[in-house]
Length: 326
Length: 305
Image 1 (cartoon, each protein chain N blue to C red):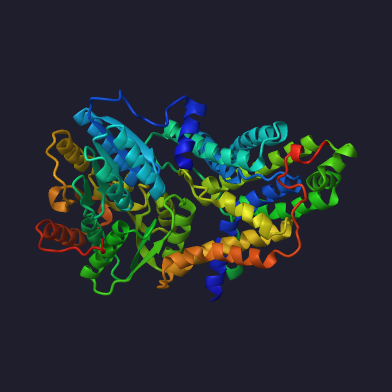
Image 2 (cartoon, rainbow over the protein chains, first blue to last red):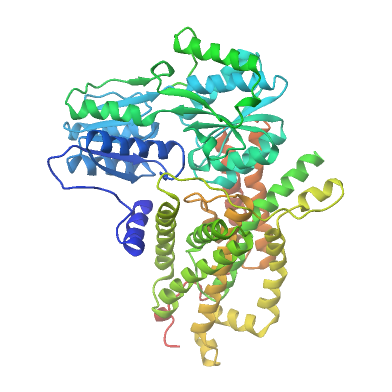
């Protein structure tokens, strides 16, 4: 609540109405809203979703609105608020939104409640499940092959299934290359404390971690900073994050959120949407490992070939990547 | 074991410093009878203003000055509310926190783009100390850490041994009596609030200019509220506050060192560590009252001056 109020106050006080961004009138048009669990300026998970929302506006001519929500009561209130105002599609960006979606959905059969990640399906509730694990598996293998005698680690915001899953796959990927390869995980308990992320990463690096995977949203830059200080490599997630830290990020596990959002929004707009678990895989091009062009040359050719084979096996469905219980 | 202690001490100092700045500032304001709930907002403002100025000029020192300046401007607004207009201190402070979250977020997006650039800025470098004795390692800290430590005796000296300190304490204990002796209660309180804002702003600037090298929305992450707890924990005394800040810094560092060591107990328990510690000590330490008698009271509740 306080965050939303804050945006409102600030918008009025500072810029006279820039905070919220509802465009256009109230009726008629196709309206889509996005609820984020953190700031869209995180250059990662939330930023990618906002780009997806903008793509829906640009490609489908939708009226869009976005709001930052922090707690389950806020999720519910925001879902209900948008549905009441005639939004046809409301996207809750994360696993944590599914309970609120399931609760509100029966009251508004004309609105589709989408969650990114999750397993809850109702006539008008559906999750898009991004199998980011497929990419973090490859990153785990990359770490174990580049530093066979080292160790890898992962820093997460909170231990929610979608984050935990990427870490389980990261560990499995490392073990795939070298059984028993040590991978330590550390959780911050917050998504925006960069200082905590730095402390956690320094502690992991001092314990021998050579490759660190971050999945902590806005706190992520703290991981990159510490990786740079200790001279270890970092892996980004959700977006190609070597743009954030060109010297530290070797590769990123990337989701093409905009393409997935536009595809679902098009179905909703054309009234062809059917409720289901929408899975996005590496095979569809929705998930990928993106390398930092400046550091790519540090990867030996044989390692490169080995992970290419793994990617091909995952795409072909020959290699099943483990996930957490959702 | 020694090595582990050294690392932990270094982290405790580094993580305790922003708390120490903010809590010392809060001490000054509370000893003058003003409960400043807005520490969190002042820190966040300092973190953002410092980052912005450092990004524009390339100098962390200029950034720190901007952090202090911006926080003092916000502190002046709070002073206008609670001293000038006699508004409820808790409500005004809470409003300040909400305002700061919004202003920094909107301004960050206006300057750096909506989806964020995660720009990095130059930071205060750790002080170089030659030699490889193990005990030197925790001492290699950026300058603000040493400034914070030096402030502890300074604040004590001013509060306990100067006329200004005496007047400030008198205003916090018995504003009516102080006024009858010719002390300008409002002026002292405004000054105390500005000093509190200055220190909270520097504490915030430390986050984006010394400990981290970037700004992220909400990066103060509740440290302002912890600073409020540390003042109570420290029984409104500078030395107690130093102990509280270091203890809290150590506890928050320990949770990450334990996770890094692969301790397999649920991480939630480790994350609780600093808070449980604070609660425990608060529960034990609530013997005699040490709070300033007029703390948080409005003028209208104090009777005619």
